[in-house]
Image 1: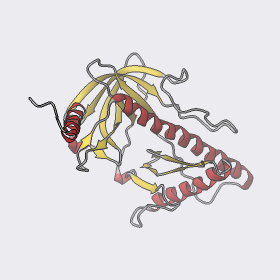
Image 2 (image 1 turned 60 degrees about the horizontal axis):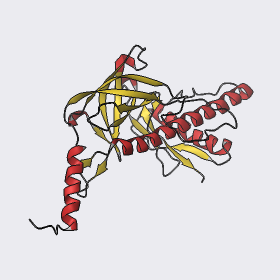
Image 3 (image 1 turned 90 degrees about the vertical axis):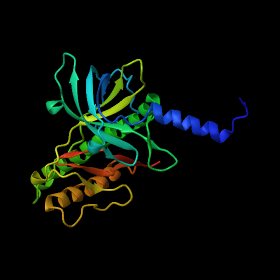
Image 4 (image 1 turned 180 degrees about the horizontal axis):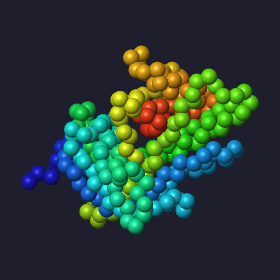
Amino acid sequence: MPNNVSTDCIHSLIRCIYSVLYAQVNKSRKFCCDFFEVPLTTYIPHAFPKKHFEIDDPNVVLRKGTIEVNFLKAFMRQGSFKTSHPGTIQFQGKTNPFTDGLVCVKQVYELKDDGTTIIRLKGRHELEKLTTECNCLIWASILLDLTYQFVNREVKKRGQPLHPIPVLRFPRSMIAIVRESSMEKVFLVEEWLNQDDSNGRKFLKYVGNHFPQSCVRDTEPPEAHKVAEFLIFAQHVQWSKTGRLAFTSDYQGAGDILTDPQITSNP
């Protein structure tokens, strides 16, 4: 057997093995996990986070339990670098903070050279990318609370505004690390967003991360446009009150819950 295997052949073999090991599972599966709660805190003047979110932080609440994920493609939603799947979660000996145990289970992916085939990452790389997402959630929740603190001060000075101010929040979220010796896997778990068009809970992109302007289509109801206007206003407040340090972008969500934010910062 020849031992002068070409480099292209080796790379092709590695990609094949990599995709087999971390290929998408097309059925439901239950996992035993450790769950690390993402602390969505309020704004404290002059006390922005000093370090990146880490699961081994002593202030991070640890829970143990199981999660069952429905991986059927019919229920999967694919974003630019994450997919989301419906799931149910149960905790050992603790109250379940998720309504009816329903959750949205997110996992990161990369694309093969063909630009369409999904490749799953090893758990350590998933954890690195998902903790960055958690960091964005923490900052976004702080900056949103900063906005509401500013609004509340102005209301006390000037009185109630003519139109109601949208009351929004970010979802309860956890990092789930699978504790099975046969696999290395990490998920981001968020509370399930009920999307009922009759109650105005359609999932919408309000503001993107390129321009400070609404992404809401003209055909959407007035309430959606009011939320987008408020979030654009929030960006201006955040940029000003942080001394041009940071503001939240890529505002999207359903009903009163926002999800998947990005943080635009300087530097």
